[in-house]
Length: 467
Image 1: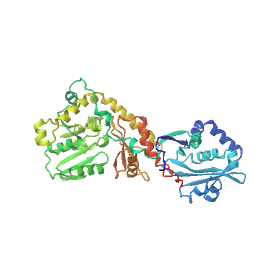
Image 2: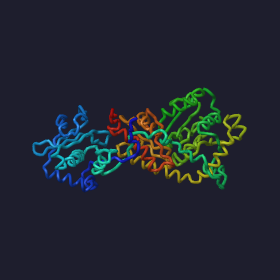
Image 3: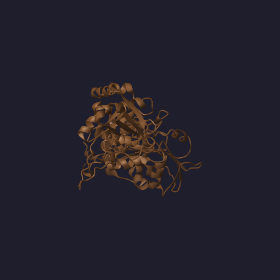
Image 4: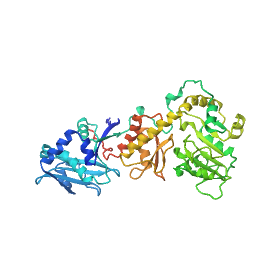
């Protein structure tokens, strides 16, 4: 049985491609090597001749057989003697990868390897590229070599841990530890919620059944055409609706004569069209499952519709619990009309909310901090959050804008074997990454590290098994 390893988080090394920043942050040992090579009179030549690179590469059998158009090869000479070479490959919009590099005995004597890196800094300083990914290794001596040229580190993970020790990270934050909670003495949760939402409400088992109840409460007849708007990710949201309610209603993205309007403040981003539709006579339902604090024009979402749906399991570490905002239905009405009465579940939800609701601002701050940290990590590779979609005070997810070769579908497929489950919209190329309050730096590094591993062109490498 072959041992693969590389399934534990470690740090890779980036070299800034700005001379001032790089020189300030480089270790003194790296600077000494650069000066030594400069004193030896090293000169650099761009080339496409891999046969020359093979002369200084440690194992010509493992050298690439051809250069892609975007790859660059630079050769180092002392006098007329070839002493080293380096191949760099763009891997993201702002990052080059140190793909191959080598020196012969004379090159090592004059520390030409250090100057190879410095030449990349000098060459690309005024380019769109911000970093050279020097690399990462699980071999101690090679990792020590990479670290010498590190001006900024990043978390990286190559392979998923074994299933028996693999974490599970989702947008919902509930874990096994949340199956127990201590009873609290506090003002009745109904009173606290009424003060916050300023209108009547009904407890329901879950967000999906709260939405179904909203259709029924608004007297939307079966077979009706429902106009759907979503702040972001409309295509995937429509797919979810059709999977759950497609036998009952026709969901359309445009219509001049809809029977009702459903507006989703998806992933915590407020849909500002809600204000316009609130002025019409059509039944308006707000899907606020991903937020309790997003606003439109100074008014909190949920305050525009005939009915609004909130899902506590998307906000707090809870398995169950949702609100249908806009009317109080007694138990008989929930049983006869809404068809989802669950008194035991409601009692549990109320107990848990006594603990979580009073500290919702703490949850919000942690979510926002986690959102900012993920933004910082992804900016390292030139990727950003969805343009113009700033999170609410309590973001449900970090919305990553994707592009080839790292599409939403590929990123989702990459993360799932690591136990990281995301939501996506393939049409808009969005990945919704977990950033809930139960995550700390280690878990966020794990999420990013699993993604970052697929950027390293060597992540698919497998050592040959000895016969």
